[in-house]
Length: 298
Image (cartoon, rainbow, N blue to C red):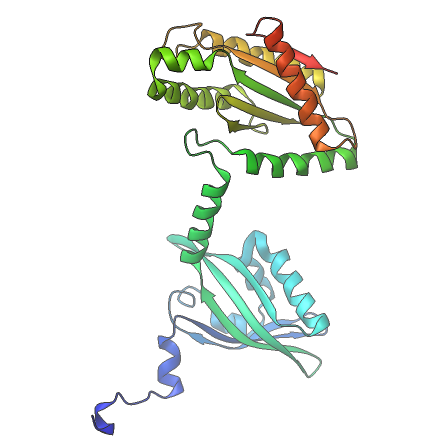
């Protein structure tokens, strides 16, 4: 193959519009004025953006483009400028008549005039973010019921107990178990048992508040986390839920599926394991006194 057989190298002016991203220079002066002296590239990123405005004054348009993530973007810019570290962040870019795109930003800073000049690239990482979200959902979701799994529950519960400790707000949990679930499986089969679990997940979500999280711990055991809820209110909610489930026909006859529920309230500063153990004890007490009931542990 001769040299003439190879494709001819394109000039930078011809090549830049073909790349799947944007090359930029971004300048922020000491008084906070922002602009993009250079902004070129291909793809969808620049089609709906006023580059002339960005070149003159990027402040207002940058806030509009990054939306709720503007504070995060500005924090990344400030951190990079203060310590002269590479600028790395990402944000969601809304596009007219199209789904939002996720944009990754990477740039190197240098002192310039009375401010900082970044030179870098912006790339569309929408497909990557969608895949991350899909994998995160798989990690956090019970496959059968679609509820949060134990992993997501524990992260959420740890977060809420921290808030409760910091602000002194009430927090209660329910531990829920389906009564005689093994007998139900033996009588109706595991496929029907799975259907009961799926329907129960739907019914519990319908009867609980939007701020409550119901999760599947495993098998026929579930937990509900109720923020800003003292013990007595949790007890009332649990009893309404228990009664509603006992009246529902899960395909095996009304009254055939009942719940034993243990409830407990978080004690400020106690280890999370203690709260779970106390609620578990309340659940076993509910079973000991005859099932299809709610037992609270103060």
